[in-house]
Picture 1 (tube, one colour):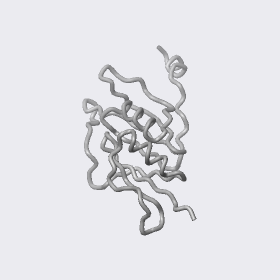
Picture 2 (cartoon, rainbow, N blue to C red):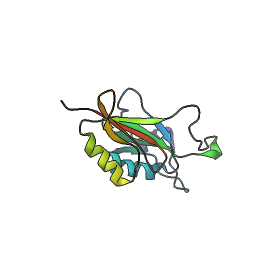
Picture 3 (cartoon, rainbow, N blue to C red):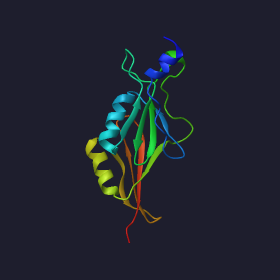
Picture 4 (cartoon, rainbow, N blue to C red):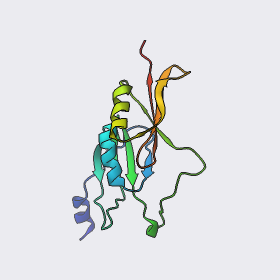
Length: 144
């Protein structure tokens, strides 16, 4: 196959939305993408087909107007799965109707870490952990 054939067989990459795109390595990127579809309304806009072990090197999602990218670990290529070190990593989702976002995420299987409540800074905020170990915070201004 020549380069021209390869380019015609590979669909173009979708546009990355937002100014900063989180790229997470999780154990089961395609399973996480499906979970995020159900829990956070994610739309899968691109995915590299899985290899013989069910791993994928790239999944691109749109979530609430932003991009989120995922991949599996490939230790044989120098990319082992490692826990976050040296910082606390959390995805922060801001939405108008935070209650419906929160309920959907919890009903789908996210664990409540800190219940959604009005915080000292005046917004409603809470935090969750998904089954893949990713921490999520949800925030919305309190309606006047």
